[in-house]
Image (cartoon, rainbow, N blue to C red; front, side, top):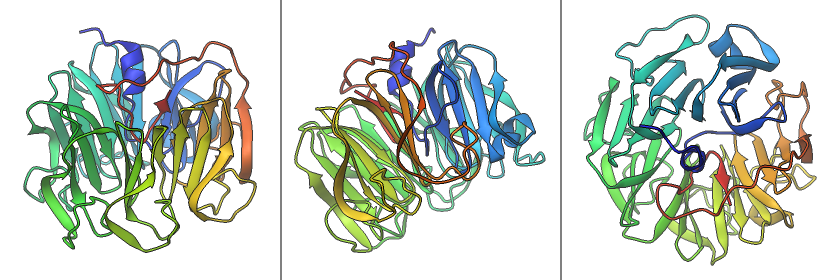
Length: 392
């Protein structure tokens, strides 16, 4: 099966942050201290402190991991997943909990498997890397999971971890997202489902249960996009409204409070929201007019408002022209309609790919516009977005 690159671009799921190093960068993702990025020719590259998990060398610039045919990447902390254009699934990095799904829990120095290995040979269309677990979606709509399951984040009605892919849902799944210890998915009828860690009510089921080991329906219909942060979750409805649930200690839900947690989804914005991204303790969203908004923790300037002050209400950062957003562990990035890539937040390990080691509290252009990045509008099907790269 030949996967449509445009479809996969919209289905990039589960990553913590976006970064890039050169003018050919097309799609990118990263863990807490490093980044992976994908160029238009299908090359996969790494940069940052834990780049040694992939190339066995510390390098704050960039090193090539795979030479061609990669169409999607997803990363959370120290492991990565990527898809090739033949639908094959590959994994690299930390495999302590079996999150790569290769049948082992082999630990190779310094931080896991150094060389990418093939996990499945075809039919995969979407990927989501959680803290120590992984999700993927096949073209038949089936949801599969592997890795750590101590909070029930795999959703298989147990708390037993697995180092092999396990089918969780047989069909009808159209979008997936993986948080640190929880998982979200959308079914074709627009219903939102969740499982895993609920200690901060990030599942949004209204209960005090601190972990759930099977999928629970949270919203009956109308959900079009999902994003999973460290301990909070965001979703969009078909009317363009933005909803949030979970940990809110830094105001990352954007509801005007800093109540420690919201046990049920709260509406944050009534309409006109097009894309969402959930970082560790902050959130971003993109409106239909191309404006970028942010809320939550701002210790490293990740909100991009020129301060280090956190905020519990959405704050406009860029007025117009934003086409894509991503939120990470103290990082935020976005594309503008001229193809330029912009960065704000923590760069302590050189993971913006430009050799910077200081916080950036206002948006900074790190790749000049190259005039060809102009993604089409989102569709309410398999192109629904999540907490990696989201596009207009």
